[in-house]
Image (cartoon, rainbow, N blue to C red; front, side):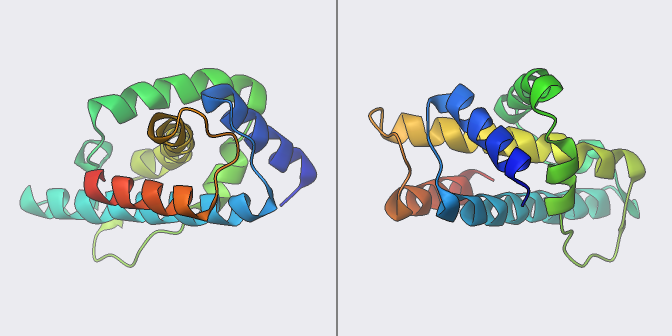
Length: 149
């Protein structure tokens, strides 16, 4: 990961929740984003199948109102931080029998960015004094997101 990208991710977490990340956090962050995007795709595939379609469209992804609002917030901060290319490179779609629509695929970097912001805010909500997430903080966040997404 390029130094400039690390700096921009650090800025994202500072702006979102006043958090500092260390080197071990970047691998965890990438793993988190990949897992959650995969989870969204799995549900999107089920929704497309339920509607007798063979292409996963954006509306098939289970984007909640809160996540949609966070996507909008990410768009605003991303104008300066320019994380889209990095986030697009993180996405690894799970094997699927259905095609992923171009419009759907184009939305994944913003969804990934919103997940980063939501994760940072989750750390702050679960511990208002937290400055640098530790292993147990990451595990708690994984469990919370596992329940919700």
